[in-house]
Image (cartoon, rainbow, N blue to C red; front, side):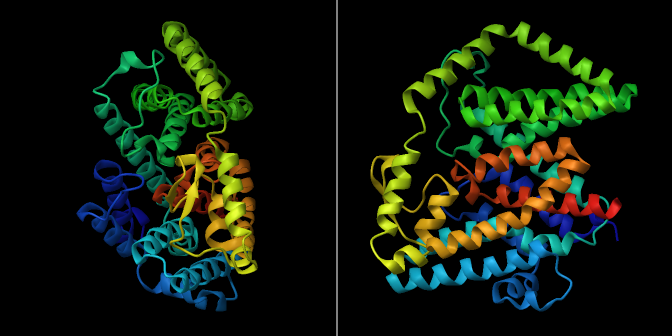
Length: 401
């Protein structure tokens, strides 16, 4: 049966729509909407597959691809070892749950890809569309929070708001994939495709304007690199469409030159004032806490552990701003090794997607590079779904090839 007609697809798409429309990248509590999203994800994933992965029973299959075998083993270790450690040290149950849920999100490829592997050809575009929709909805809610202050972009730095909508990886994904899709439609030709291509540039501009308005430095830089990296690919396949895109980009830059220059000045000023945003001091605090004993160094302080984080004024919080320091704090050196093995196992899929579909790869890898290196967004639902999209699209491309 074609995937788009299945109840699993409907549940996944509905979860993403609710996520962008009513939830937040990191909701402070489980409300009715978060419970509904969780229920829809359970409907999509089921019970059997999570149980098989959590217990390691899935490793009994002899047909697993290497990344899935490594990912399942890493998931088992990272689920149980820090969980037992956290319970032993007596951390708050709510804090433990708030760490375990992001772990499940990060390992969504292990849970979802086996279920979607045999799906119809709509699996990849449906997931990509759902992520784009969530990102655009987050952006619209941010603009509403700013009272649609379009004239503020480039004039002064705008706040992220209390819900940090723009931190969601799906926002950067939408900011890259929408122009890529627009260019693809131009390359294919036809008047209705041109109309749709120009229509897609509207939400793309809203995403770009939001990231520039809130001065998300790394997101803006990575987005520019994503576009530049695909220029040779577009030049070989659709040079005239690329020329049109260059004309549109140049016209936009000329028309809004004051805005563009103001945004660049704000980025430079933020670099001067905040630098690396205390990431180095944060990492040193994690090393100090993990190095106090051999068990803490090897196994971490477990899910639910807190740290006096200098990146947030020394407050004792349950998070750090980078995946590496977070994993070392919670799961120790052994947890970092397990996580590294899992992510390294996904690298061949990323390379395969780069060869098969550079525009989609650029759209996926741009937010993942931010989330997995220098931002707390590695804990968000859409980060795990972007990893799922990357693996699934790579497998579909290799199968087709």
